[in-house]
View 1 (spheres, rainbow, N blue to C red):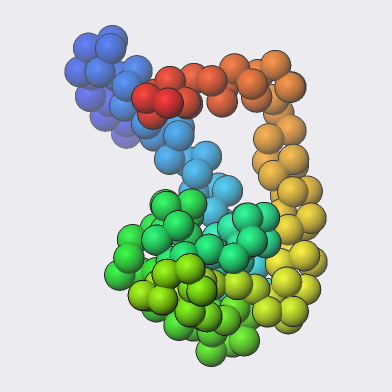
View 2: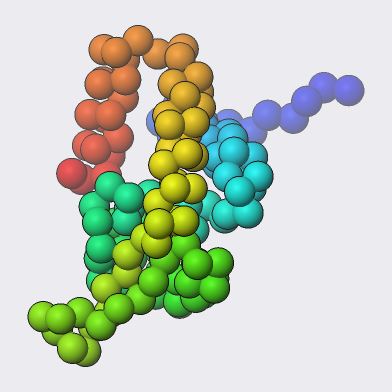
Length: 148
């Protein structure tokens, strides 16, 4: 049986292939990350929050949402679960009593300090088919695509 292939013109076909390739790359990375962090009982969103706090220090929830590209509805649940696991704490912001600062606990810091180097190794493996120049070119192209 012959495989059906629809054609929409050279430009549209290339655009479709490009979007599929980008999504496949992201799905592969998410699968690898999920496998890595699930052994520690974390979700991708939880890892994102902990990673942001690990590298940036204590932040307000709105800052975490911006850094992790999350939504406020999802972030409420993520923060609550990380507090319950004792990986982070919420403290009133001394400069703005209406806001909370979120910071890693010692336990949270120890977990992300263990996971992050392993994550870097996974990323290097995932991107090993590209040399440094290709990585830089791809980064520049993706920034251009996103209007940055």
